[in-house]
Each structure stands twice: as C-alpha cells, then as structure tokens.
Amino acid sequence: MVAGYAAKQLAEDGLKPGELGIISADNALPYERPPLSKSFLAGKDDEQTVLINPESFYREHAIGIHLNTQIERIDVPGKRLIARSGQEFRFAKLILATGARVRTLDVAGADRENVLYLRSLRDSARLRDRLKSAKKVAVIGSGFIGMEVASQTAQQGCDTTMIFPQDRVWKSFFTPEMSLFFEKYYRDRGVRFVPSAKVEAIGVNSVSLSTGANLEADLVLAGIGVTPVTEVVATSGMKVENGIIVNEFLETGAADIHAAGDVANYHDVLFGKQRRIEHWDNAVKQGQYLACRLAGETKPFQNIPYFFSDIFDLSYEFWGDTDGAEQTEYRGDVNSPSFSAWWLKGNNVVAAFVMNRPDAEREQASQLRSIR
Image (cartoon, rainbow, N blue to C red; front, side, top):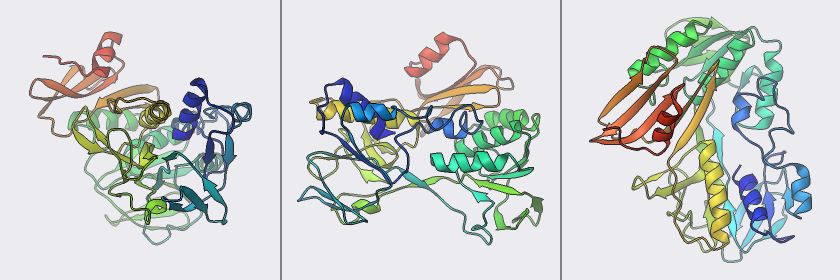
C-alpha cells in the first residue's frame, strides 16, 4: 500500500519516466488491504477493483514493477538491493515498506489445509473460496481481523464461533462496556463466543481447547496478530526494535533510506513517543508523505492515528491513542448501535471512537478537540 500511494503522489508531482521502481514479494500490483476482510471477502470486489492504481498507470509513468521478487540483502554503502534470485537493483533513494506477516499457530494440527490466515490478496481469495462450502467456522482471536472475519462468515451462513484467551472480546482496545455491546450484537446474529480459552490442537473437523472442550469446525481462521518483516535489514546496520526505527521524517539511520507502513517504528511528534501502526490510514499517509519528502518537504510526518471497521451493518471509526488515558466518557447509549467513546487524560481528549453519531461529533473526534 505504501508503494501504491507513494507512486500515485509522485506521479501527481511530476515523476519522470524511469525514476521509480517497485519491488515486491507479492504476486499482485499494490492493492488496498481493508477490502480483504470486508467487500472482497464478501465477493463484492474483485482483484482489479481493489488495486490502488490500475495496471495502465504503471505503464503510462514507466514505473518498473518487479513482482514475486524477494530481496535478501541491502548493500547500504553501494546502494544495491540483492534479490534471492541473484538479481541486483541500484537505488538513489530507498523506501522500505516490507510490511508485516501473520503470527502463526504453534499447536498440533496447525499445518492442516483447513487452517487459514488473512493477510494478502491471495489469502483472502483462498478464504473466500473455502467459505462457499464451509459449514462450521472457528475464528481464533477477537481483535480487528477476528471480528471482521467472524462478521463475514456469519453473514455468509456459516456457524461461527470466536475463541480467544481474554475474558472479553478485544480487551486490549474495547472498554468493558463496549465489549459487552459487541458481544451481544454478535450473539444476536448467531456468533458464539468462547472466552478464556486457548487452542491446543486442530483436527480434521475439530478444535481442542484448553478448557477441555472440543468444538466442531471444518474451517479455522487464525487472526492472532502480525510481526514486522525486518530480516532484510538484519545486516544493514539499521536499528530494529519492533520494526525498523525511524525518526519523525521516517528516516532510518542510513543515508537516503526511509521506512514506512507496518514495518516503520516512527517518532510520533504529536504524542511524543515511538509507535508502529498496522492500519490502512498510516500506510496511505506515510506513502504520500515520503513522496513529498523526496520532492523537498521539510516538515516532519504528523498524523493522528486512525482506523475504521465495518462489521455486519455497523461502521465505526477511531482516532488517537488510549495509552495513559485516565477515564472514558460516552455520548449516546453504549448499549445501542449509536454511541461514541472519549478517552481523556486530564481535560484533554487523547482518543475517540465514533459509531453512527452526528457529523459534528465525528469532526470533533477527528481533531481530538477537548470536550470539556
């Protein structure tokens, strides 16, 4: 995604033919990731409609595209990229946007063909195909991916069960009141929850849990998080700690090399901390920012962390950072599909969740203005 949006911005700013190359281990042109657990998974989008730019865009701007290409090493002094195939690429400026890979299950049966993950376009296409014949689906994890996939599988007529080790859904993000609302909303639509449980083994048509229970499941989707892909910089001298460390200009410690997207652990000047964000908006904004940065932009990267989600017939948005918040206040009825949550530190709003609320409230949340 970083590559797709950076290319689009560079083209708008007067990119010359042959100035840009995109090297990717993926087999597809840069595409949007949100549809993979939403409209693409539901069959409403296809491989072409999720592309950030059409194939013709890259031809028209003479942008070099190298798919299915795995870079193994960066020669920083020589400004060379060495691929697994032995092919070499030279660069004047480099943006590292290697993203993240899914965490995988480490239990007996995890290698079965009915155990799937969701990260790439290929993953989503495979899951979509399998859902056509699946009857009972076990979703492991109750975070962003787990909730969106469970929503889709239930809507496609699958008997869906969510399994997670915490005592309530998405405990790391939702307040207790929010968890209670979403759990009821999902149950009312046929989704079952198995909290405080870990998967210990996966059979042909079953999942064994730490509670001693065995659940029937002919398809298992694990959404247990991701880890940044940093192996390519292991011997480069660049600092790696929960991603590639970059400053407020998304610069690594190596000259002319930047990092962006899921892999970038950047200095957030708005909140005064290092952070790594695994969401669409961050990849878009950092891709656009670096395109401008390479063209002479001197301001640091500034962006309020943001993400959105679509589940069943609900859509919600979130801005900010709940870390360190001292209290949470609500507007609307937190037991209904129309409410907002506001996290405060002192008298300042540091984060906001908005679902089916007036436009003025959404605007206020997006700017993190004080509600005091």
